Image 1: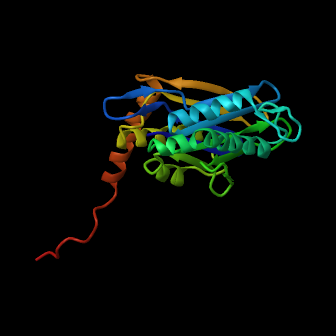
Image 2: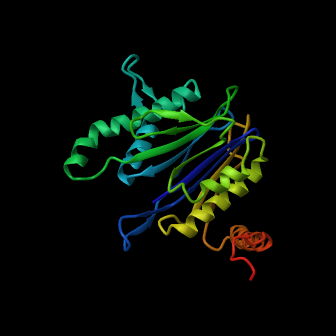
Image 3: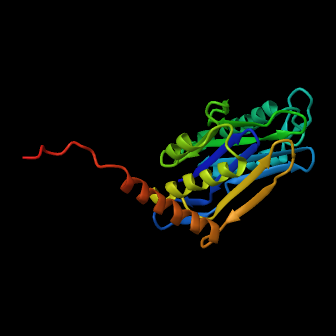
Length: 249
């Protein structure tokens, strides 16, 4: 399994991804699912992947190499896309290209063509944007009313983001809540696990403000997990019990 979350607030963008992949209980590995494409001072994009590992790796490789433009004959890459919308279209085109190459063979082998991606960032002088790209290559965009998107095993972490994140949330509070969301997912699904990769992009900075991997035993994340567990226990203890018991007799 996988859990990736992108949070777009007024000051910037947070992208967080786990690294665990498994093909059975005894075949667990670590692979990077958060990929950064950057021209410092001009543009920075983050791409997070979920689904079949061979598919996602092929898509990422195509995006690095570029896709031939049928009209110009030149190679289109994320680093020469003119807008964020065009860049998101290129991600979708790369997914469709891999489907065209491998989809039939995978179907014959009984392997599902399963992929979804979160793609976000900014080109200098243009708005910062965040998209979810589906397996068909189509996509939706994150908005101010719901300032986050998730892929993978999202159900355990979503309630925390729903309750705690708004478009006006401080950028590093968004990071904190995103890490709590990741911890909640890890506690409920063993298919999601450390290390965690994350980037923080401040609006109009055009390069990552933070690009970090959290390993097992990292002090802040360990403390966050313990404090969140203690806060939940204190909260439910402080709330009165339901008045639904049998009447006093």
